[in-house]
Image 1: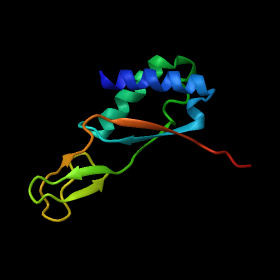
Image 2 (image 1 turned 60 degrees about the vertical axis):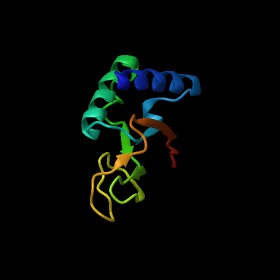
Image 3 (image 1 turned 180 degrees about the horizontal axis):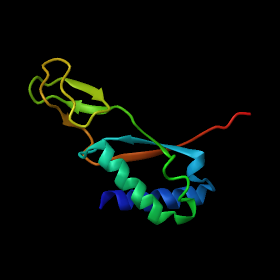
Image 4 (image 1 turned 90 degrees about the horizontal axis):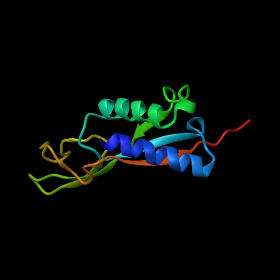
Length: 112
């Protein structure tokens, strides 16, 4: 399962960087699954990979960011955070540039 691999990689990266889930936000590009289902599965696998941070998993911010799409109907290239975005020009369903989710870790800056 793709989410399990991502969760293990995130846990390892955070440990190496000395960060906790409370210190970060995840940004997701691409994918072929419903975003809510992906997020729920990722959280389940994060709980398994990081049991010591179980309290932080529900509050972890996960946001979708735009990524490239191509319309097979008219050839239009555009960005959208949606997986099966409709072309803004002809409204046909587009092909996503990224078929698997790619997750980036953003460190949150705390100001006092």
